[in-house]
Image (cartoon, rainbow, N blue to C red):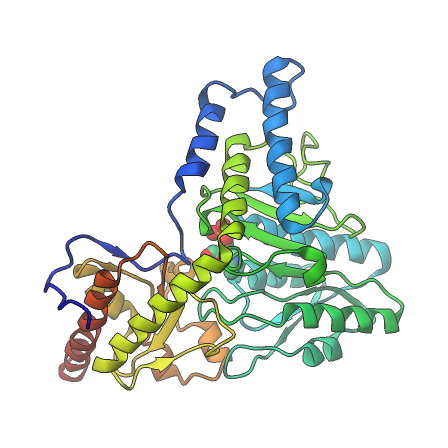
Length: 401
Ligand SMILES: Cc1ncc(COP(=O)(O)O)c(C=O)c1O
């Protein structure tokens, strides 16, 4: 039996690791000297510059090792959004220049960085096709391959969804896209938004069969404002940031050396700890879900029951608004999200839930809780007993209002 929880949380309980994570100590320690002692510009032709360049190239080799890639295929960026923008716009423009391919294929449940990059390309004459998903947020390899056309410039399928946590059969999709491209006598690059994947899923780009892959440092214990774009050697690409030609002409701008080193350190550790992370957060999630269901048996789990990120719990409660629920839990010291943090500035029902066929009245009552291995069971038990009375209270307000 869990200890009976106290009526007030002793401190704030953070259940929003999909939105951001703390920089881990090892990453911070690796970064610190690069802000003060070894701060020179890595392009500079002096000893300080050479040392900074060495640190940067060490980080690149480390990331390449994790991805099973070549160091020159790793481009450091300012985050997931930039990596995704570069991947989609960079490949689309290069492909259109080379042979006129102007069809971009992706899914309805991608992050807005993907969807809005694709929408942007529509203004330049590209045709965007969004594949539907099933009730769990899955797309099949057959569906993706069947939609690939002779004029497809790029396919982009997210590895794991940031809202509901559904994990796509990416390697199967990649194989099917390759087979279809071969039949068409073309090379059609596949990009994946792997921003949510690094803590629990394998990232070997050859095993996955992807040509481009986007990562964001702050989702796995690295610093904010850091990202990686993996860009397979032979993929046509037009740079999106022009200037001094850094990152082998693919991303100009003085490199964020401390950021790259912090990201590389956190990525290596996150991938080494993948199994332990999965085991621990899965057990925590089951405990939290059981606890919530004791008070709210009607809570609906969104996303796939098994093919999902281990630390993601995404629920809908009818008769409440997700935003109101998040505010009420915040007042109790519990930090979580109504759907996705990135979209909550302009709150509207989640495009992911609507694409999965969740009815609108349920979709507005969604709550995402994303865990971390250091969360205590006492804290989770506290959260679990707070949900039912909070939901009941908000339902009462909705009726009387
Ligand atoms: C799946 C996914 N893609 C892209 C992003 C954007 O990443 P960043 O915040 O580093 O720009 C996020 C952020 O939440 C995400 O979850």
